[in-house]
Image (cartoon, rainbow over all chains, first blue to last red; front, side):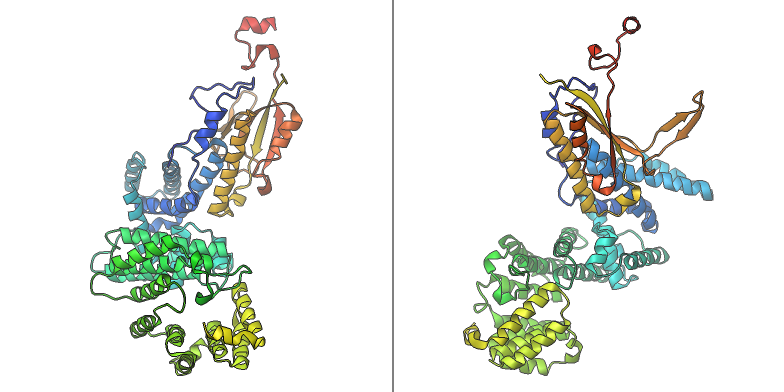
Length: 455
Length: 137
């Protein structure tokens, strides 16, 4: 963070000059140019929660959230008029710690609790508040282990992570999950209670528990990313921010000794290679674009490069995780210049491995899509109708969209239209609906069907 | 040269509830708007200085000053969050500056007050340097 001085004050003894001298205005402007980095307040919230929990323990999560919130508010109000101080993070930390001490002191006065805590707390008060980057990352990782504790339900984990780790407001989380603010608030209250009841500590798990606990963290980060990536609702910008947060946290995880294992890198690779395609996912009208319709020139080469090098970092050791396979599939797409030159055969193999590792009708459906590019649409249709647990996908719009597309490729426009209509009934988000409407329109005008068949 | 006069902008704060409902990004944006606003005024030489006020502090009252109330005052809806000291042509200019306060949409009010200069010849400090001069005035 670059230093910044207070508004217009160039010397500590500057005296107000009512004659209108503006000699210091230029330097004030120059000094103010640094301000704070993008997302500072949001990331600061996660950083602050980590710092405070380290000091006050996970059992004090409610207190920690309260004082973090107050400190961030005070920062906004004070800095609005006064300018950003030279070390904003230390400023906020100091304010938050003082607020926490005040609150605890008041609580003690009311309940006249053990004086032992007092000594401990008063000792801490004189501690410096500056943290190294390594400490900040270490706190973030501990916080991930708290949020992803097996004692908490899966969706509760994601919501809690968004709130205390990623600094999203309850309103934002409600928008991202298509839920109400009150419902999210209620769930968070229950989750925090659970953390107290289960006496979850603010620590890196012991080596014996680490692999299992790490899996829980990876699963939550994966969910977080998917929540942002899937087009199932909420604002687009907000969703992309969920993805960015998932990437940021996974990168922190990969950089930490406790999280630096091949499957963490594989997950990060998967996220980066998927995020690289963000810019081309929607057409000019905001309709969803399928992979083979996307303008690959708009894929982010930097993210692809970073993703491929993460995938290389993941290619050590024995374990082959679902993240490895999914990242490998994403890499096949990202390195192909167009859809026909994609190594579909290899992708089908990866899906085979994935099905063995984690059988799911959605994976089977994706496999069928890849298979259509190897053995043709008819083979894919056969595959889908013979698929295990196919009925579980009946309410999944993509199943019908895929079946419709396969029929359309075979020139069976009526069957195609029927399936697109069915998909459209289920799809509930603008981009999906727009995309399906386009497909339906196309099925109704079959003249260009043969041209598309050649694709 | 055009004469300039001092005006004080006094910012009466938004309620704490309004702030609490804002997302981190909204808060950051608001802060950045304030900073940009101030920087613009500073570059034009229209603001001398501006300061936030700490929420703590005291109120002294009673005929002998015997009543002392401790802060903080930040939680109060109408608490004063800070001030700018402007140097501008007239009340109209000060008012139009106040109208650009970024927190107005959130419910903040801005008081615009001309700073009285009892004795213009005494200049910027606004105060006689000694008792003798004060008597002379």
